[in-house]
Length: 349
Image (tube, rainbow, N blue to C red; front, top):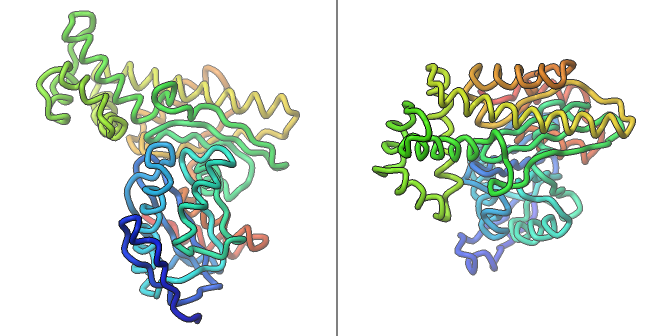
């Protein structure tokens, strides 16, 4: 155990002073930070999970490095509290951050989290959240992961380390099939129904109640608000629920969203195949949109079958936050089968 170290510059950012009173070289931390939530997992090198923690949205593009660091700090503190041990530096860490696309992004994140003293500088890896989602889905074996949460993107990785991604350009340009995209399509359908250009839908009753507005014109004003992505993405469960109940408008939105997602998968698959890589045909769907179940997954499978018959949709082995843990363990050396199995058993319900 080291002596106490006070992080004195954090109060300037509006945070509580952190007291680092311990060193935990036999622990690792994994962080998965996305457009809706930030999650942390504190794990022994054996793979046994000691504690999970959570915080609010942590997309670098939306939140900025300072807010992102605050969310990571909150999730980390919660994970240590859940483990019942004093907070301190761990042996290694991996941060998977939504919106972290370039080396400049990684530098910004690294600068933001430096005062948190998560792990020794050379033992803290920062990358995009697609890596953590993929590592969790396949324990870093070859395959493709399709994320449909607040945003959407597909990422594939081969046995030789070749990789390709499609989508993930943000809600103003793309993010087809994401929760934000589903919500925006629902509001658009409501507008068209009011105009007489579209048919009535159960969404016309559900949306005003959920958003607290009386007309689509009021809803349009919400799109300019700073939290517009969060407000729109919160509508996705209304769309998928209406689709599962047979609403024709909602079904059409879900089917179109599935088509958008399938196009990303095809783009990734074909790009890796063109490179001559040994492409795995396993695809793992990850993200809140897929929690709607069969109404979304079946639509995706139909869209894939029409474009890429060889793809097999499989459940992820682990959630992305434990994918981050896996990558943290991997940075310390090869991850044994015993460690992998312990991680599998530690998967949260």
